[in-house]
Structures are given as structure tokens and as C-alpha cells.
Amino acid sequence: MRTSGVLLHISSLPSKEETGTLGKSAYRFVDFMDQAGIKIWQVLPIGPTGYGESPYQSPSTFAGNPLFIDCALLEQEGILPKGLFTPHKPEQDQIDFEKAKAVKSALLHEAYRASGERLADKVRAFCEKCAWVDGYALFSALKDHFGGISWMLWPEAVRKKDESILAALRQELADEIGYYRFIQYLFDRQWQRLKKYANRRGILLLGDMPIYVAEDSADAWLAPGNFQFDEDLHPIRVAGVPPDYFSPDGQLWGNPLYRWDRMKKDGYAWWIERLSSMTTRFDLIRIDHFIGFANYYSVAAGAENARDGKWVIGPGRAFFRVLQQKLPGIRIIAEDLGEVNPRVRSLLSFCGYPGMKVLQFAFGGGNNNPHLPRKHRENSVVYTGTHDNDTTLGWYQAQTAEIKKQVRRITGARNAQEAPWRMILTAYASVAETAIVPMQDFLELDSGARMNTPGKLGGNWLWRLTKTPGRKLASRIRQALTDSDRIPSESGI
Image (cartoon, rainbow, N blue to C red; front, side, top):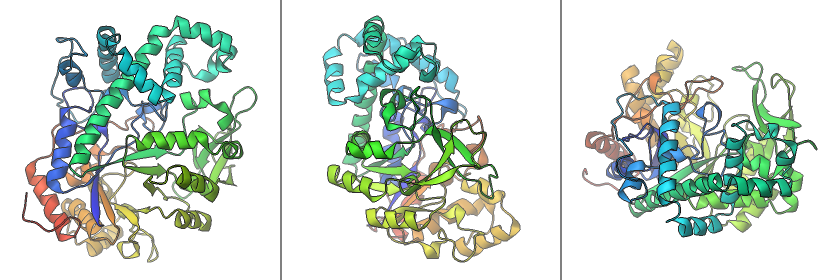
């Protein structure tokens, strides 16, 4: 069935807080999607953010970001005492994360002091259902206790989880551990209510799963045997991508690589738990860097760049056979961008997952460019651009005269102002079953609204809406979707 989606992260929602939240504006955005006929809401990873506020470098692949907890809802429910939360209307489309974290932390601690004991039974039941919570809460409390430094710099006994030492620390940090359990309960409570609201309107939530975890994460500390660490729990090999035309040194991501041989012995239990947890929050899951399951690029830890890495065979079909057996109903989209060799194509064909096409990549690459609209396949998801791309307007403005001419010829755009919408219409006209458009392209915004520039330090992940899109835009989108047979034909909204 032909359908459509929108890419907008939770942090980018308008709200009366320093970042977007799971509050009223999230429900209004679902209403906007319903009016427009859009059926898939794609978000970025929803975990706590790491270095540079990147959602792709989280201290936990399981936890929810406390910044997304809506304080107005907590106040309405009597969880947060009245008078502490001061709502305000955001006037800028850029987030001040340091202010956001300070304000939210203070309010959530007040909520914990006021309601932690009253909600203790519900928190306990949530933690029993979600086995990962206790380990994450302990990790977070320890990280605070040691001044926020990486777990690899903690005292050796704690780093290597000496049980007698940890028992004493659990007792000493009981209140802090309780706080982290409490806020994960609050996050999940608000998330599940929003998901239920969206699903009732026929809207599916699409989550994003980075293939790798951050080095400084609860995942790495709790289960170091899953990763290529030495006996002292330091990385041996780390992730990256090799040099190319755009990056002569390659990209050194630095994430610890998996010990796939060990993971296979226990039936990939950690992966099954991870993906099973995601299915409770999302209807569909996009696996970022799917290529890494076929073959992954391995760089020696401590290397200055990724030039001297090597390709290593990944777990391949063996992993996905287990996944399909353990989670037979899981719905996955494979991010198959990058060096797609025969091994990657074979694995994607075996799994049957839809891959990705990105229209911004379609121009200037020759007649066999797989992103060209005429090269698309039904079992795929087409994007105008992703979170790593410039907005379509900004992208078009930066292109050469030759590429602009090709864009005009294929999309019908006569100038830069028409480029975003013409690219949207081209995506909708594709044979790809699903077409997803970043919210910035619907709004025809320039590079100032770009979400992320890979390789750039700082200045990423900051953009947000200052108000919910209106009825006029919803009507325009709905007509385009109707014309492209992505929703049943009907008259207006």
C-alpha cells in the first residue's frame, strides 16, 4: 500500500518548554498529520543525548530522554507541584540545550521529591517489566557520583563491577538510583499515551536504531563481553567508514565494535532484548547503517583517522534468522546508504526489508544512480533528504548550475523557491511504497533549519518549530498525497 510519512524529531516540536516534549504540541502535531493524510511519523533516536547533544551517541539504547517529559502534563496529574513550572512560548527556532537540561533536571527532581513515594508501586511494576531500567539507573547514578566522567575512568573495582563494592554504592546512592528509575517511568508513561493517540488515528511511529552504542554508555559498562574490549575494558577496535571523495581521512566514529562470535553463542540475546524493547514504543524501526550487519569497517582504537581500517564480515543471515524467529512481527526499514556491495544487497534481499532512496543523492551521479526516480523499486522508502542532509532549499541553492538544470528537468522546478515542493511531488510520484519528507521541506526552509551536518562539531540538532503547522499546509499535503495515490481520493479536509 502506498503511504507517506514526515520526519520530525521530538526535540523539534513546538512547546512551552526549552525543547519539544511529549505534551500538547505533540498531540497537535498528530492532529496535523491526520488532517494532511500522513500516516507515518519518523523520529530520531529518543534516548538521552550524548556528546554534542547527538541522539546517535546516547548513554543508553533503551532509556528515554528526560528532556521530552512534559512538565505541564506532570502538573495536571499532580506529579509536579503547582507553581514550579513556568511555561513560555519559544521565540527562536534554535534550542539552548544547557538551559533546557538545567531547568528540566530541577523540575524532575521536584517531581520525584513530591511524588516518588506515592508512585513507587507503579515505578516498581514498570521496572519489573523493563529489565534494563535498574542497570541504567545504577549507571546514571554512578556517573553523577563520579562527576560525569566516562565509566572507563572510574575506579577499577567499579569499572569491572566488583559486586561487594557495587552493593555498598547501591545503598549509598539509593535515592539517586530511585530518581532515574522514576523519570524513566514518567517518560514511558507519556510516550505510550502519545503512541496510543497516534495509533487510534491510523498513524504509525517510526523509530531510529543506531547500529552501534556509545563507548560511554550503560550498554558497554553493563555487558562489556559484547564488545571488542581488552582485559582492562578498553576498546581494541572501533567503528568508522573508509576514506572517500568527500572525506580523505574517512570518518572515525569511535564506537566500540561488537564481538559477534560471542553474541551468536547466546542467541544474540542482547540484540533481541534491544529490538523487543523498541517494538513496545514503535510500530516500525529504521536500522541505521544496516550495511554493518553484512560487513563493517574496523579501525584500531587510538588511531588518528580511519585511513588504515579494514572491512570485516558481519553476522549476516545468521543474525536475521534468529531475529525473525524471536520477533516475527517486527517491521524494519534498512538504511542501506553508503558502500552497498553484493554482500549488502544479498542480505537485504534475504531479509526482504525496504531500503532507502534519497532524492538529494539522485543528481550528478550518472544514469545508473540508484537514487534517480526511474531507478526506484516498490519495496523501498524514498526521502527528499534525511536528518544528515541539508534542507532541500539549502541543498538546491548550493548546487552547480549543471545539477540545478538536471533538478529542473526531472522535477519541474523552475527556481530555488519551487525546488522543495517539486522534490516532494517527485518523491510522492515514485513507485516506492513509502515517501517520507522532513518537516523543514514541507515548510520550504533554507539551511538555517538544517538538523545535522556530519563531521561538524557543534551547532547540530538545534532546530525546532515555533508553532504547529496549520490547516493550509495540511490541505496542500493532502491534495498532493491524493493526486499521487498515497491516500484514498477524497474532497479536502
